[in-house]
Image (cartoon, rainbow over all chains, first blue to last red; front, side, top):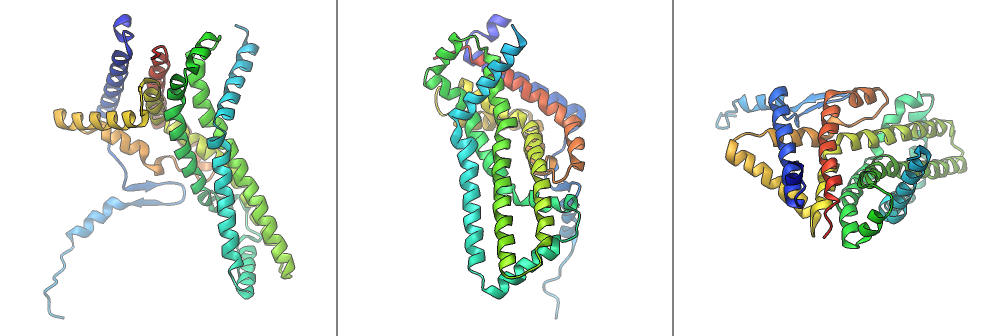
Length: 66
Length: 284
C-alpha cells in the first residue's frame, strides 16, 4: 500500500486529495455543516442577514393610485 | 539528535526564510506603512488651520479619559489593510516557496544536509504564521508612534490640550498585541488553505497557483456534478468567512482558539501539509 501511494507524485497527490475529500464529506455529514456567510456573530455585534429574505415576502402594489 | 542542536537548526531555517523573503516579510508592510502615512499626511496638510485644530481637538476629546483597553478595537479595524497585504504575501510565499526550491535545484543542496523534509516544510509554516506577523506589527507600531508624535507636536503648536492624545497612544499600543494574535489565529484557522497551497507548491512542475485553484475548482465541480452534494463548498464557505476568525479584543481569543472548528481545521491542514512533506521526495 505504502509503495503504491508513494509510487510517484501523481499517486501521492491523488491519495492526499482523496483523504481530504473523504474527511471533509464525513465531517460535513456528521456535523450537518451549513454555510453561514450571512450570519455575522462576534463580540461587537450580531447580524443575521438571512432575515432579509423576509423582505421578499412584502407585497408592493406599484400600480396603486397615489 | 541533540535537542539543542535541533532547535538551533530550526532557528537557522527560520532565519533563512526571513532572509530569502525579505520583500514579503519586511518591505511589503514597510512600503504600505509609508504609503498610509504619506496619504494621511497629505490629507491633513490639505486642511485649513481651523479644520486642523477642530480635528486635533476632536481626537483628543474622543480618546481623553476613556479606557485604552476599550478603545483599542478602533485601531484593530484600521490595521485591516496590513492584514490583507499579509494574506496576499502569505499566499504568494506558500505557493512559491517549495516550488522555488525545486526550480532552482536548491532542494538538492538541502536534501544533502541533515535537514528533514518535515523540518523544511514546518519552517515555512512557522515563518508565515508566527514570524511574519511580528514584522507587520512592528511596522504598525512604528506608524502609530510617528503619527501620534506628529499629532502631539501639531497640537502643541496650536496650543491645544493634548492629554487625550496620550490615551490615544495607549489605545494604539494595546491594539498591537491584539492585531498579532488576530493574525496568528487567522493563520491557524486558514491552516487547510496553507496546507493546500504547500501541497501544490511541492507538486506542480510549473504555475503552482493555477494548479491549486484549478484542482479545487475541478473537485467542487465533480462533487456537484456526480453526487449533487455541496459538502466541500460548505466547508470552504465556512473557512473563508472572515467573521469566523475576526478578533478585535482579547475576549474573543480563547473562544476562537479552543473550538471544534479550529481543531478540525488543524486536522485537515495537518493532512495536506503531511502530503506536502512526502511530496518533497519527488524531485524533477
